[in-house]
Amino acid sequence: MTNTSLAAGPLPTALVRCLQPMAYTADGRPAQAGILLQHGHASTSARLAPRPLRGPLKLCFSNSTRALAATAAERGGWRYCEGYAYDLTQDLLFEHAWLLDPDGTAWETTWTDTTNVVYLGMAFDMDELLELLEESDEPLLFGDWDRGWPLLRSHYECCRRLSPPE
Image 1: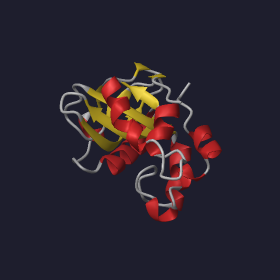
Image 2: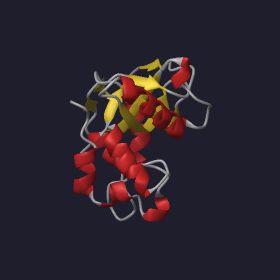
Image 3: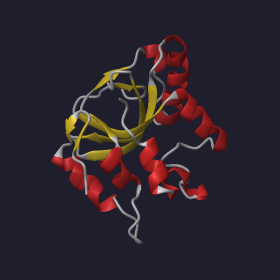
Image 4: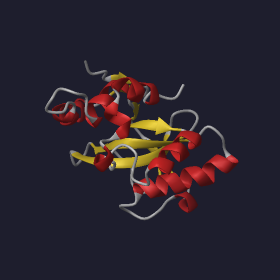
């Protein structure tokens, strides 16, 4: 069953419709989209991170990792978030990474315009992120296909990690 009323309110129907065909693997196991629909953290808007914390286009995973490292030193409670960003205006879905502040607000570290963008992802604090990056330097959710997506291997373990921030 899909949970369409997450932390920031109901997900737009267009996003749910876009993700549902990708929600399960051919053998019926939950895939990234399905797990995010059930357990992800949703943000219906984002603030632009200050210029020193933003990085080049197409490097969102490293931009967000770097920005979290810089932010964590001076502000506690920030989290790295990885999942999908959906542009409602253009009806486009992107694999993406951003930051979440302690209040659950999304902070964009790559794009310069977040108008009509909805974010759905899983959040990791600095310690979790560093632990996972020790195992692989690939993006956590999407890029680790050669190791069998270790975060998705066990549905129970994944659900534990996918709990939205309190």
